[in-house]
Amino acid sequence: MADFLIAGLGEILWDVLADSEEIGGAPVNFAYHAGALGAEAFAISTIGDDERGRRAIAELLTRGLNLESVSVDKDHATGFVEAKVDSQGVAHYIFPDDIAWDHLTLNERALELAPKVDAVCFGTLAQRSEKSRAAISIFLDNAPQAMKIYDMNLRQNFYNEEIINRSLQKADVLKLNDDEISVVASMFGLNGDEKSILKVLHEKFTLKCSVLTRGGSGSLMLGQNKEIENSGIYVDKITDTIGAGDSFTAAVAIGLLQGCTLESISKHANELAAYVCSCKGAMPPVPDRYTLIR
Image (tube, rainbow, N blue to C red; front, side, top):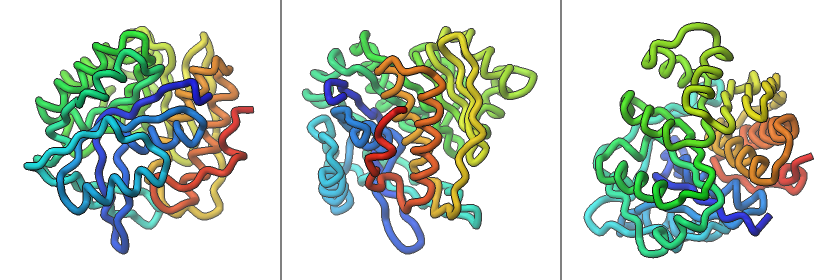
C-alpha cells in the first residue's frame, strides 16, 4: 500500500481546546490517516514562521507525515481555531482571519508531486481566500491522474455556491455530512430525502463515489452501481469527534484505490471513525486492527 502516494491539500492549524492545543486541519488529518493506513502521505499547506508553526512541524513529523510540500509564510501566523466541544463530544469551531493557510503557496516539491499523486483530498475552508483557492485549483489541474476527493468541510460562512459548484466539478469523490447536505440542498434547490439529494449530486457531477456521513448514525455511500447504508458503530464513550470524518475519508480513499467493494469500504471507514471518536484529538495512534480492510 505504500506504493500509493496521497496528499491532503489545504489548511494546517491548531485546534485550541479548553485544556490543550491539538494539531489538525481536515486535509492534514486526512493525510495522517492515509499514512496510518499504509500510504505514503504528504501534507500540502502553508504555515507561519512562528512558534506554532515550529510546533506543527515537530508534531507532524512525529506522526510520520512528509512535510517537504509545506511552505512557510514569514508574514502571517500559523493557523489556529478555537474548538469548543459540547456535551455530546461534538466540536464547534471559530476561525481567525488572514492566517498562513489563507496564503497557500505551492512550493517546488508540491508542484513536483501533483502529476504523481494517486489521490488528493481538498475542501472548502482553505478556498475562502482567492490566493489559496487559486493554489488548490493549480494543484488539481496539474494532477490529471489523481483521484480527487472533495471533503466539503463547510465552516462558519466560509463558502458559497460558486466555490462548491467548482469543487464538485473537479471532484471524483464527494464526502459531506448530514448538516452539509441540508445546506447544499437549499443552495442548489434540491428537494427530497438525503438519499435522493445525494443521488442527484452523484449523477449531476458524474462522481465515482459519493459519501454521506451521519455521525453516530453511520453513513450512506453511492458508487459501483450500489447504495450501501451503514447504521454506525456504537462508541461506549465519545471523547471528541475531531478528525473522525477525516479518518473516514482516508479509509474511503485507500479502499477505492485498492479496488475494494463498497461494502468493505463502508465497514472499515465506520469502524475507524468510531475508534477516532473514542480518542482525544484528530490523529491518535491507529491500532493494526483498524488498518486492514476486511
